[in-house]
Length: 212
Ligand code: C5P
Ligand code: MG
Image 1 (spheres, protein in one colour):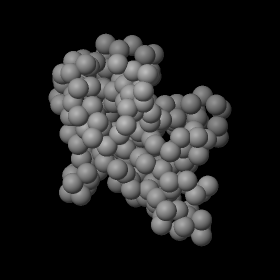
Image 2 (cartoon, protein in one colour; image 1 turned 120 degrees about the vertical axis):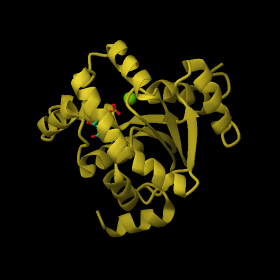
Image 3 (tube, protein in one colour; image 1 turned 60 degrees about the horizontal axis):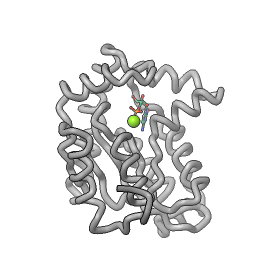
Image 4 (spheres, protein in one colour; image 1 turned 60 degrees about the vertical axis):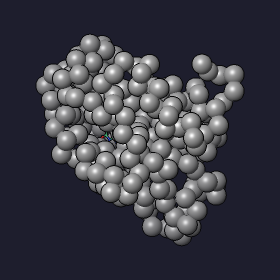
């Protein structure tokens, strides 16, 4: 953090290789459909999908020195220190070969947001926010059976609390900057994607022949 390269990146909204990155943050409560919709957006608009939660799970499964800490945080629905998560995101961006990213489940709190901006200098194009009632998210999480250790009712309740207390203020921060595109995520997947496309279509060229 705080190197000359970092300072230069700040000017460039980009990577250490000098490449300019376009980033959309995808936020919403646990079970609001972020991952599902990101897969659709990737197909149609050619973004690379980076899920902060997936990157953290991969890191803990790789036997990293942070593995135990990450596992404990996930089990408790707590937010892993930004230093770890931002590094994983930065590495994934650099290695992807792409220059446009959907960053899903991040920034999860003010610390995440400030650290990402300080380290990468990247301002998001906009924030896609999946708005969904808790009862619906709870039903989806308990029904999805992905084998995740945190999809049990006790951890789900903790994740909801963290979302309300720590993540919604980040949505509000971007709302104040006019950057939030809010989607009604309680609807069926196909209907949600119609609303998502209305956000992306005006600014992105579809990737021909890949989808729909
Ligand atoms: O987004 P997802 O539901 O996959 O996140 C699972 C867990 O990963 C979160 O409950 C949290 O413990 C951790 N996480 C985090 N910081 C992020 C994203 C996820 O600590 N930015
Ligand atoms: Mg997810």
